[in-house]
Length: 454
Image (cartoon, rainbow, N blue to C red; front, side, top):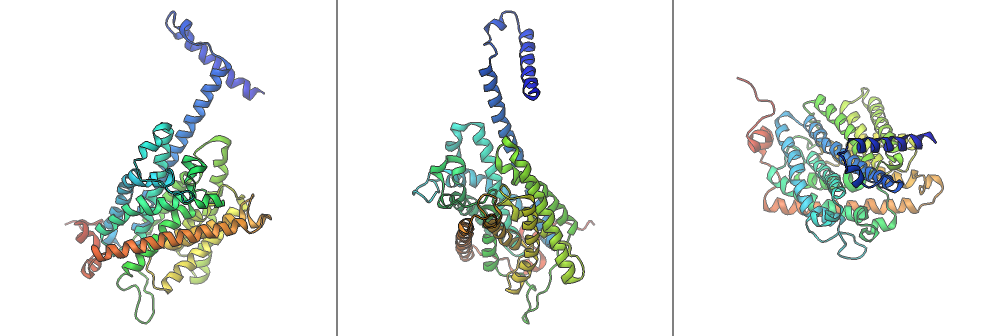
């Protein structure tokens, strides 16, 4: 009882102090403090706290761009670091503008066709005007999500892609490719059930975007990696795969830790509310899956190569984070550990598999975000406490999850392959052999990350 009485007494005391400090006659003009007015103040405070939480989460997700920049730069060669940093900067800058102008309205606007779920392109301002600052909070949160999806592509195509062509694709993915699939799965987050897409209507579960964000970016990256082709010297005529090592594992490790921190905005922040404290369970599930993914990848590489591999262990942590992103709100802590463990194993063998089929992904982005994103989305159909197969709820949820995964692959890979192929014909997609050998930094940007002092 005291926990209700004390805050009430504090509010009354504050009200009394304000009345004492007011000029003579002002107290008579002020409305009396009533239970209804206090209730209204509490509701306002709760709403504004939710806005604040959503913005703080958005700032953490924004900081993930630094993590992606460091991971991708660390995993690539020193002669291409400036190029990677420029791509990450372009993804965030151009992607924000493109998402504001077009993508937000497609993703959360009123549907053109009933049941499809993507809206008419228009300024986001017209959609958020009625909601004021809550609309602005939601917009910035979704905007940095869109930038994340775009950034995944740059890693998969690193060290051989023309910057100008990549910039065009970055605009297209943030304005159309990502928002259209997002409208299928998340459209009702803003406009209510009438704005939802067919995947939402089926009951598809992807709480924070294992598929909506991560797999969409990864399947686009897969299309780009196939169209642009592998780096010079990666695959030999006799079938041998030549490792091309990254130049700075300290940078890559720092990037992973930044991403890990940012994920506490990505997953818990997707509640967009502090009410009920659900974000706390989501936070611990996120932490445990990441830790389990790192441990699993470390053990697998230790057994396979007789030494624990730093690159794959770092990717193991990211794999766990990606995998738990879809089911984080509806699974137990024990299930989150298992989901992370499986993701850590998957990412190691997925990287090897893509090497076997001669798809060159310098940073392992397709394996981390695509394969493990699909696994995490599938895991929601297995481990969800209210609808999962392993909790006696049948195959219905699992089948829905599989449909969502397949739709994501067909949409993102298909549209991205077409866009990259057309861009290749019109602008060219790959740098010249000379540029690739010398490095993209000097010839594409006229600068170096590590200039030799004279």
